[in-house]
Length: 205
Image (cartoon, rainbow, N blue to C red; front, side, top):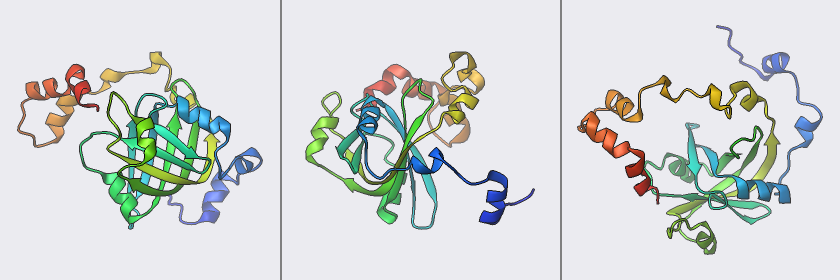
């Protein structure tokens, strides 16, 4: 294996960004960014702790209830009931920086936002993030430092939105994966019942 150990080596292979790749960076939300975030039901939140250990966590809600625009330099992302690991949020407490990639199903572009992060247990805008009568458990607030649209190449290469490229049965069902990977006392049948969509949906909010 040939390890790249310097920026010079990296740039020799990748080159330097030019043109729109450089000038697309912004530090404030544009009205188009607001429209995108209002239409997006899914994002991935990236964090790291004080030692650089990283976490990437998917977040999803109905469009318009996932990411709240506080103002042109501030966004908030709702947290719903989950497994209580809080890996990303513990990271934020140690290292107040975070980034998100915001997706709209069917669109090959993504919106990338990064900045300084903090956690809120309540705020007036929690009402605007209510889903099925439930406010967020907490909210991740990001003070925007960098924002730009990312190009479509990764989605085009992966054919992510093409149904004929999907193979959900390439691996065993989730209950079988859990049983194989974890020392859990539940039987496979009990896990199948727990992860059944009609039962799992009852615990979303």
